[in-house]
Image 1 (cartoon, rainbow, N blue to C red):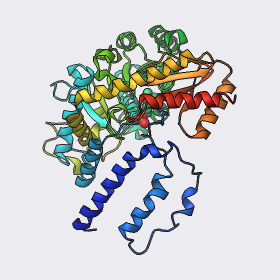
Image 2: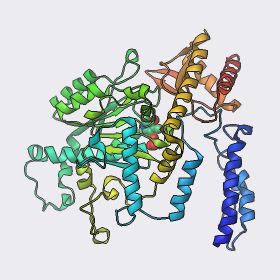
Image 3: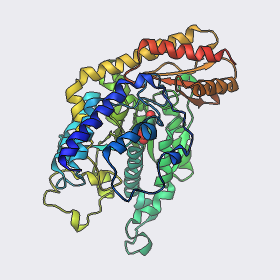
Image 4: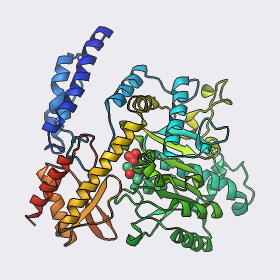
Length: 485
Ligand SMILES: *Cc1c(COP(=O)(O)O)cnc(C)c1O
């Protein structure tokens, strides 16, 4: 393809995407395809000879679009919102167009500095203290990770490094750096004694980070009366018990906006315990963090002055498409030191004066994710983003009122932000049946969750195209299908 063809077909691709968005409503949120569908549509071997772009375009609907799940369909209510907007798509076009890789400042100065700026903008928008800003002279830093899962893993590894450094000598005595088994990472002999905590409601990404990080993670009990948020006394008791068993508590992953019910752990009270007991506190605010840009939802970042690392997904609720997950460190030096492998080919003359983002992530290569956030923040503005969040919260409230007015149904947890957890008042089995009827019917798409043995359905406001009429529509579909149970 030469640049003339790129101009022509690139514009056609833009039209294709814009048509997709304009006609989303004519589709259903989930497709009918079965696993392996693609074998009938795509050959087993790559083509020997080049094909025309007309031929490729001709396949897009049936191979890709018709067979996909439409996350921005107004009747898609599953998981949590996944953001998108035209300015964000433009950012990804430019990122792909530049095709650069930004592991060091030198490798991509604008990628590094725009990311530093945009993470500072975002930190200020949600009310993080200055210590987390790149522009602050202290050791704090902001970076854009791919996902909340990556951020949690990085928090586990960074906190593990700090714990090993702090406790290695007292627990293990002098370590010989000559030991051939532990030459790279001698403090790792302490890892088996470390223990971390999270709420039983925390995302499976936290379990995964514990598995990958090779550390014990204890899941702490929550209480329905406390809306399933983690309480400080539960953490304090667990720390005491584990210390008595000779373990070293080193990390709490708190969640602001859990996946099952959008519960909020008490970060302020938990943070005070973490400070007193020397635990790293990481906050996973993947979904709910965006709402803190509205003054009325600022309670979501209460206690953040006690936090060591904080993360939320701009790609969930800030109109920036996947992936864009900023993470902030109060003190980035531990992670930087631990993740620092400095081969000669990556050294550069400015490395003492600025951030090299390679030291704050698991991989080396990285792409230009700040562009799409920059475009969205500039072209939609904080006011536009607040309006989107407020609209979606109002739609959730509307759905919650429909649930409470119907005596067959009940809320399984209070409506919080854009999420409604609801169920038939009868058995778990009846609710499982209802979920199956709804998702087989395919007019709307939702997923279930469970807390303390109670199974319920979750309706999350996801699409920017969802209106008040769509909420009524979704409720009518659910009521119609509930009649069959
Ligand atoms: C969505 C979500 C995650 C996972 O997000 P990824 O960016 O896909 O890793 C983690 N934690 C919470 C609370 C979430 O809502």
